[in-house]
Image (tube, rainbow, N blue to C red; front, side, top):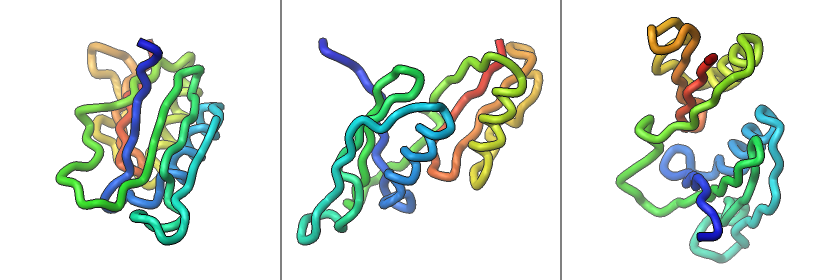
Length: 133
């Protein structure tokens, strides 16, 4: 096996927001866009939407795309990114940024299994768990 990477497909209400989301993620988590390819005019997808993007966050490769085709699914909290934060300030910075336009599925609190944990869905519908070990 050469690699395994999370792959995000922006569909439905999130279609066309892939580039915006990826830029947000790499800026928030000090990542990097390695390559991005956009759909051209006259194709099956609207011109300017993302055909494919490769990016890294914390050294982990990720991929994403836009899809305007009808799908019976969207992002779900059943898949989330789990972040072990270094300290409370980092956790709060990530939590605040991800909650801007998003929603708290489990607000930052002590849940017994962790003294500081939050589970949030960002403005793009992607779920994140933020833990302070």
